Image 1 (cartoon, rainbow, N blue to C red):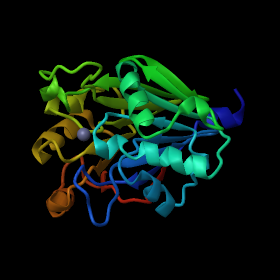
Image 2: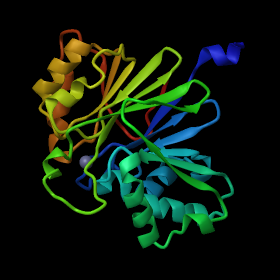
Image 3: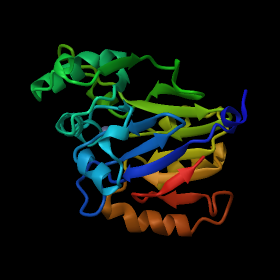
Image 4: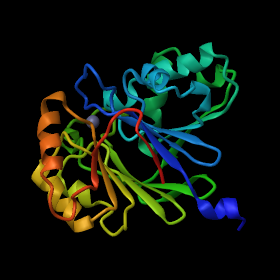
Length: 264
Ligand SMILES: [Zn+2]
């Protein structure tokens, strides 16, 4: 192993930090990992193209996209983003990761936007993942997904080709570990990667109470905590809660802001 491999550094930059409700000052939740050779965009909801522009991230730099689930604040910007790439005459290949059972749905969504992947001037691969498997994206950078309960109440709806699947993620590089809850459906979802010693725990703040969150964070004790998916109505309450921390969580919690970059 040479010295550059042993460093295993990567960074994380927040692109959007709002909930599913359109926010006057925040874009929908999204962030980007930068590794040695890759820029991996996590989610691409409505408005992602403008969010990337505002955050000065060229579309051409994005090498991979991982989609946590198919609500519009996490997926709906994808056709527009691909369209921007076409307009800019992109040549760089792009990989899109989604759950295996959602590939059909994604292909239909893109076709309905008149995006025909096999006719583009750049290669777009849609790659399916399964839960609890480890997938390599770049030298030492891996992800594992686990199913959460976010859209579990939709499971009684039976529609052909429609699966209600929502994922939480563990990202690892060397001994560094980042958990991203994405949108969850129960407090148990906060413990999906309970066994992991976490460097950064990124959690949504819409579908849980601050008490549930506090309990989970005290038990798991990550080194740093970032709260995202922020409702305008909840922002003051969350800020007050962060400032009122006096125990083990004191000085560990950050309310996500767009443009914040963390070296990991
Ligand atoms: Zn959602």
